[in-house]
Length: 233
Image 1 (cartoon, rainbow, N blue to C red):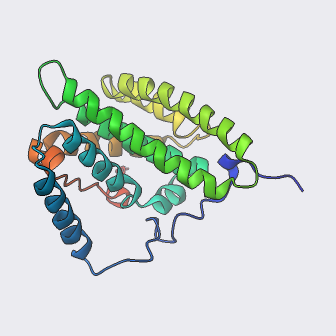
Image 2: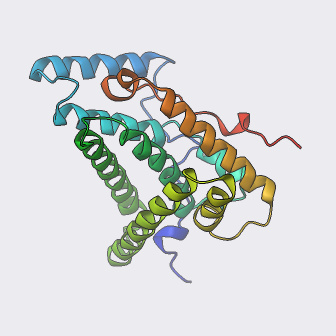
């Protein structure tokens, strides 16, 4: 029997509802309150200010967690006919991380130093999560797993360039970028592509509208649900 590579492994780290399983799940609102309380105590203890690099690093992890813990992955798998695999999980994660990176570059000094630092920290948080998940799924063949993560890294860099070009151009260019990367050139249903284009534009607009304190100081990213983004016929 052939051994599945990392990218083809079933995405068992996603629950049936699409969000990551959390055995310590608390009541609605309790997690946010606890997170805010812990963050506040940490910041007060060490004397962080909203502009320090240490504070930005904390923010980067909270922003990444807004993707990994709150995006309904199963909805993406279902609506866009994606296989429930690690590769599909990464494609969905990558798209939302790119949106965060784009918003991050709007922050900081005139030189963009803070924005670049935040951007790099978000990417670092993503790869930390990818490696953790990959170790669980690819424990039987760590060498092949490392090779596939290197491939993902190369594809990620190319995706950022394509998505940046797409978001700054018209919908046709963005649609082509999404078709090539997100759909891996395996989608002949233009309504699905159009729906994802609309979703990306709306998410970008939502992030652009967030004031600095809701993105940098105390992140409050309320991702638009895919179910609410329909293409009108």
